Image (cartoon, rainbow, N blue to C red):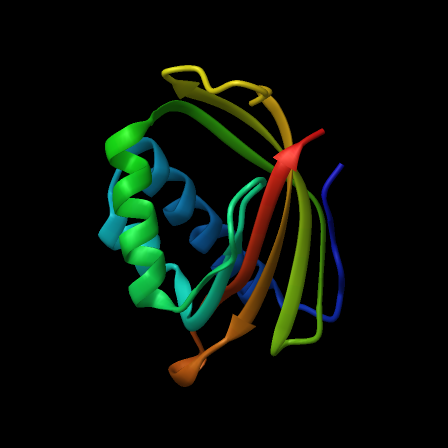
Length: 134
């Protein structure tokens, strides 16, 4: 069940949904450039068993290597809760994710936490993202 809080306008909720979809499709397409552009300049990725990846430059390097190693033919991101105040928002969600080749310990059913921050010009970006097995 998705719960969008009233503190976020309908436009903000739609913009965050569009950002989530760009992120999802960039992963399925293996497009590191689009993936990286979803993040704030100082954005952070925290994946299990990996060091934190900070900043767009580091994210671009990390995700380029990741997309060369694995493909993600199936990815569904389902938000469960989206709460925010107009400048900062967080989302808790679940994922249906298939990676090829299969990775040890990687489960198809996953969870995520995304922190979104409004940037210059009013656009939303991912400030921090983490995911892991449920």
